[in-house]
Length: 318
Ligand code: HEC
Image 1 (cartoon, protein in one colour):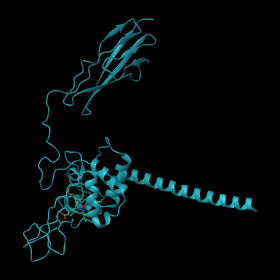
Image 2 (tube, rainbow, N blue to C red; image 1 turned 120 degrees about the horizontal axis):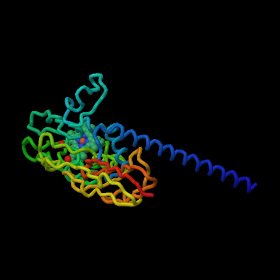
Image 3 (cartoon, rainbow, N blue to C red; image 1 turned 180 degrees about the vertical axis):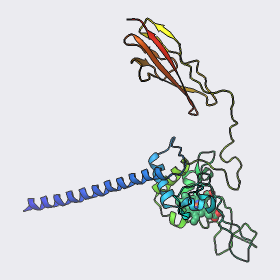
Image 4 (cartoon, rainbow, N blue to C red; image 1 turned 30 degrees about the horizontal axis):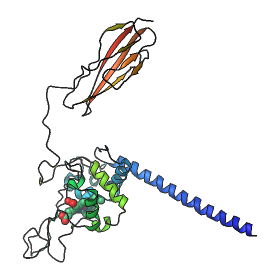
């Protein structure tokens, strides 16, 4: 009897364990779906260098499918959608990347004759030249704003004397963000807020509208003319007797993008050979049977501009 009871209880805990795991797995699948959906929904190119891409995808899902941040943080309804992409005209919705999360949406002043009171205008959430979102926020800054609603920029302090067009009158508390739905967002989990932050770090910078910080995105680099990145593969027109020799890509030219990376490959149609050091300027190649071999050099500068060149080598040895 004792043994039977033990068996039963073992069985129950086994059942509980498996159902918890199943729930956990379901949650993982659901999260993965949201991450993927986030990447589909992002209306701008994302810079994922050095970022946690799962957080970026999930953050995009919250910002674009749940939080409706761009509804307020674009420059206003007339320019929030790309031309021909206004869903309220019955068109397929297309967000306007030129105003995406750049702020500048004016929600008007307090409708109070005792005014003048300041206009409440949504802020620029895109990263600035520091690479951090909301104009240089650290993750801690951002979480603090979202959790407390305290305006870090103190744009509209509480009125102490007469309204001066800048302060906010009681019973409103001017140290807090108005209009912004922080009382709801404050309840998000740490991971949710972290994901939003990671996503906002990955979107392109937009200048302020109207301009409050000039060159917010950094100084515009002057266009460099004349020098373009070019690949020069050598030696050209070579006939060799020996199976092994060195290629030379050192004559390649780097354009405005600076330092080059090298990649030597064997295009389709050429007999195969081995390339030792295929990502260096001067790899060693080892040939197989007699014939004409083709080698292709691709150089890429640090701005991602690529160029290619090919050489043919006629192998006459044994
Ligand atoms: C209903 C409109 C609305 C929505 C939706 C909205 N915001 Fe805001 N947000 C504002 C306004 C307006 C301000 C500026 C308020 C003020 O000046 O008092 C603001 C301010 C902010 C600030 C403070 C900016 C700073 O300089 O520190 C942050 C951060 C912010 N919003 C993030 C978000 C995020 C993230 C979302 C989506 C999850 C979002 N907002 C959705 C209207 C909105």
